[in-house]
Length: 296
Image 1 (spheres, rainbow, N blue to C red):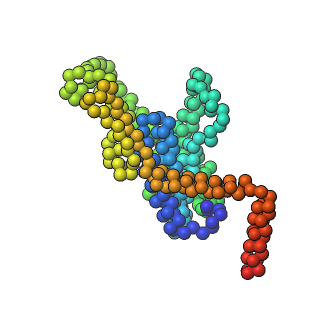
Image 2: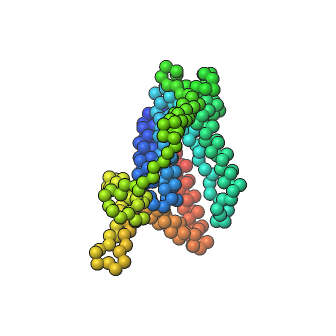
Image 3: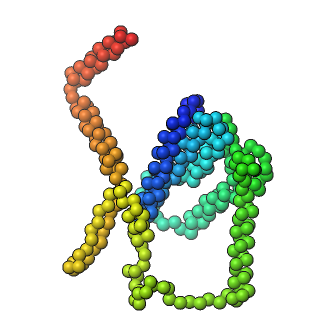
């Protein structure tokens, strides 16, 4: 967008901002009410894409008003999040299997990379500055404040020491552990959990993913298409089922899919004709083009 369109208009950024906020909100809402892990991860990815669109909208909006430093900050946030995106799916995934010990150990590299991105953002931001300077003409890692402190705008407005913050957090945890060992000598007291007044507790009383997501589902019920199957007192085998769908899917995407299907069927009819019909089409297009050329 920045290299193809050298002029940014403010309402472009505002439009991207609204679309990104809506996408992120829907992604968060739908991810909190899912009971299937795959669907939860899918909606979480939609949430991340929405946040990236928000950052892109802010970059366009700031660039339109000549705030290059803030535009570079928003663009850097978007590029920083792209680092965590996965690779596209492959046909090899049809033969997927559980990871063995060595494969699980390989995930430590990703964990280490995530920790390094959080502890040393200055070094990574300096690399991303090469991209932001080409696109928006400014960067946020140009000033040299050392590797310990991260200054996105200026030291008077915002600064961050991730390593110091981590050391402070570890020191607080260590101090709490030392105090517990010093005054309580590591003693443990085990007792039955509180069961809200019920004398008998079973596994069926445990909160599930659906139970945790029920308040969110009730709050955003107007945005959702909910279908419930409630048991009656006379059912020999009572069953409860609830399905949640996105209203925008039926309002927007299903109509687009229907129009696409109709267009494909119409195009398919053109492909099943005779050679005389194809020649007629070519002749009609040629006449139409000649008329347009003569008119202009």
